Image 1 (cartoon, rainbow, N blue to C red):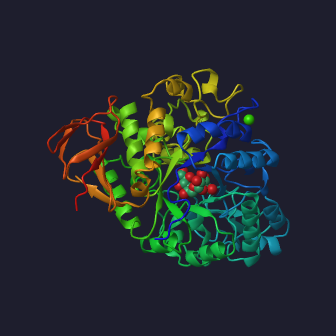
Image 2: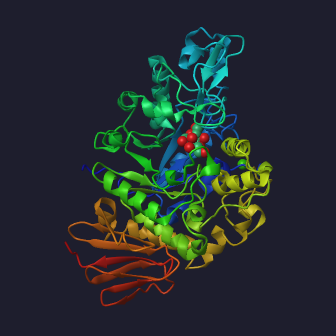
Image 3: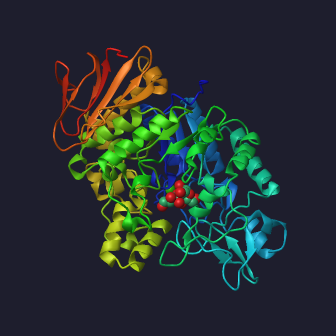
Length: 558
Ligand code: TEU
Ligand code: CA
């Protein structure tokens, strides 16, 4: 496998709106990010992914772009963006931006021109279709609920949107539209971006017949991803995108991919440099929504990660995450309540960061941020959460039950402001935060954890440094992933192995202590989340307390 510059890097996702506000308007901004580059450098971050900062009406918090060439004034100016780029480069850090090109905002000039002339050229930048017997062209439900089709005012036509109606889908069959997108992408790359996280990209290929699917909900509609899963040809569009844009680091956000297409997506000549591994996250996808999301079972979580690692290492790399801006906080989701402690959080982070692949840390993960306590639906500011609440109510959940579902699953759990201090608003803003601050900020904040050598933050710093250390970066980057002790309840363990090193990462997610038989001698204890950094081993029996994780170098056995 050819070596690439990004293979041994560690990435960090910033959700700008919630990162740090420096002008008191309650909204995070670019000046805030610039002021924290040294904090990120000290964490060992090489690549920073910025969630969208383009001009937007913020119907979907910026994933509805009204001008691909303009910075949203809420975040700052293009000059400040250029300053951020320059300051990152000074620190040998890379910036990647969020590329949202399955759809744009209904306020984008292309869509405004299409509405003004529904039979004109700009209408073909989108999917404008006549209805069927007074109904929409097909029975698809959008990711955010309701029909995927919205009336084009003054016509007998509808336009297609797989997300909100304010996010009309761009017509990738139209070469003119594609050229406009490629021009924009190259413009940003020429400015000095190192690449992109590519949003919802699997959705760009549609079945132009828009066939109905069997209804799968009380609304008589069918999930739009059924069309995504049934249609072929996304690869041709992705190849057109790749060959028409400058070479860059790309990480695709890909759900609903056909399993046998993985090599085409991330292989040596794949559509993308890498794609995120969501195998643990989709375990708790409900059949109809968050209200029927299955509870996470450790054994299924372990098996999903192992399967993804073994499959992926045949072809390339995935990007490993615990959480992102679309998911609840991993510490609340993947750890049982007894393990939602600094030890458990350090354990979960160790597993994620030492897997094979590119680790992405999401803002706040490094200090152990957890889900917030939500008291009413009015506290949320997320289109998806509000839709999921209504879906739950429509199938009969009470207001309280639906609120509990949203509290557990909402993306806003990841979007509460970053907690910098124990002061007002967690040090995020001197104004009124756009979204409430998680009440846990008093104890969970950067300033408090800077002072404690055993804090989650200082452990993450050690963990990232270990992954990038001269002695171990080769084996953690390119070493084979080999699962071990899969039959031991509560234990998640694997080797990272190459011809010179054999590293065992072993964690006990169980409530009780567990013992595992080592296959060879311990040569070195590289990391442990025990405060004294020791391990409890008699001969070949390694005893792991509940929520204990160790990183051991073993005598290299075959
Ligand atoms: O998410 C794409 C996606 O798969 C969503 O449907 C996701 O499952 C949903 O947000 C979970 O509630 C991307 C972005 O990450 C997300 O923030 C945007 O809302 C979405 O695309 C539209 O751009
Ligand atoms: Ca601000």
